[in-house]
Length: 144
Image (tube, rainbow, N blue to C red; front, side, top):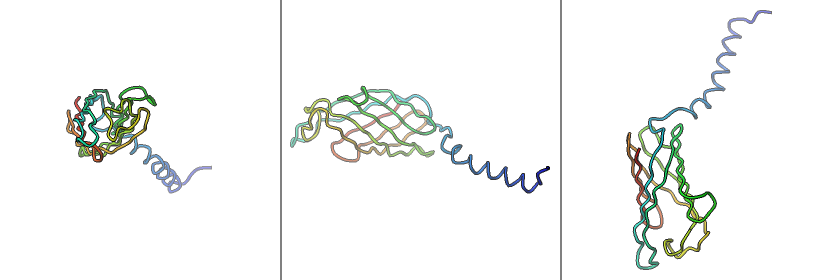
C-alpha cells in the first residue's frame, strides 16, 4: 500500500514539530565553553561583622547553561552557580551553597546551613560580571 503525498507531508511536519523543542533546548551558544569564576564578597556591615572572602573556581557553559561549582557538593563551603545565559549575554543566575565558617557568613549563620540567592550578570565574548541581588554585597567576574 502506497502512502499519499499529502499523508507523507503530514508525517514529516509532525516529526519536525515533535523534534523542535528538543533541538531548541540543546542549541549551542556563543558562550559555550570553559569559564573561570571569581566570587568576591567584601566585609559586611558592622551589624554582623561578617568577614570578606574571595573564591575562584571553574565553570562550564553547555547549550547556554552555566554550571560552576566550588567545593564538594553537599559539604560546607560548597557553591553551585547555575542559569541560562541569553543570546544577548544577560543572565539571572542562582547560587546554592552551604555555610562553611560563620565568621564569613551574614547574620552569623551556622556551619552547614544551606542558602541561595540570585545574581544579575552580563556576559561578553570572553568575560562577564555580576552582582548578588540580596543580602550582602558580592561581585562575580567571569573570564575565559
